[in-house]
Image: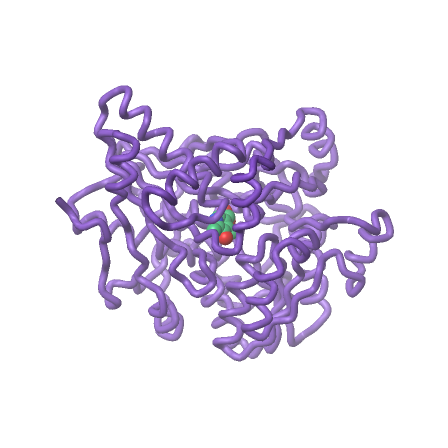
Length: 451
Ligand SMILES: *Cc1c(COP(=O)(O)O)cnc(C)c1O
């Protein structure tokens, strides 16, 4: 029998990131400015470091990971790949289940994989301060960690409900030296505008992005960073899939299906893109993004140009969207409550290369608790979405007798989410529907493009 835990040496941390654009059947549509014309690198330079803009637009297949970044990634990478023997036994399935565990990073999720790279490129560009948004707190934690390692000041606009509900994520960011503000705040025009309409606004990722972008655009010493969605973020996350491929090779296995939780698409891209060329070459591999039924961006949204933030400060991105002024229900998988999705993931889904499914909240917690009991690790509520889909697949294999190999990203641990587990265990958690009327209403406000 193979080892349960499949490890790599430090030297096997990838030396290059994989840029999926080089292998996409069609290039992604350009981002558009307010005038409907493609955004230029000069326009992006007000808030992003030059190397990151270059990566955002690059068509080069392999991009070298700077040595300084690899040195920091060594703190927790290569991350382990587990063969879930115990879970297989509990499910009594003939399927083989593997999961790549990204919760071993200091911040507890895959997000530092990009935070470290983004902080590094801003540092060498002479930037002193970084702004960002955070929902559940995972990205804010990751950037606080990375900013501190490179001696950069970090200011995090944290969605107000999370700021109040997750004080320990806030303490974590503050421990790494970051300043954390509840969003909407009255420090920015975007925040003031929202508060004037709704003084009790609970905030959303879209609003927090508006605030962080506005501040970065107004200060020369400050840049903005985003934890998902953008091409360069997905690029940085490909270390996940590249390592996983090597780990599976070590045990002579290959996945029939991969599941990953999908918020903005960074761990979907990070895990799945390195397998995409195989699929193009004819391998029968299914790549499935898993999202919440209460924020069903891919499965029920529209493929259209939309803003990345609420107020409309970002360029227009061709993506699956629920409408930029969508304020998602207060589900506990905060990292999946975003109205849009990565342009790359959206296009590949639109072309039928990636698949997507939506799962309801209660089923995800049921799966997470079953997983915790079998494997020991308590997953982040976001990760529970992938676990739920993987378990369903394993149970289908039990019925059909198929010996499939199932792989999923365990994108983070749930140690800061025990309040959500408490609610589930005490029966207080409910499924949140997303009614068709509200969905249609939010889509009415999509920006009109005059080409
Ligand atoms: C942020 C987050 C996600 C969702 O973000 P993606 O960009 O879609 O990967 C999923 N899991 C965890 C643990 C997260 O922190």
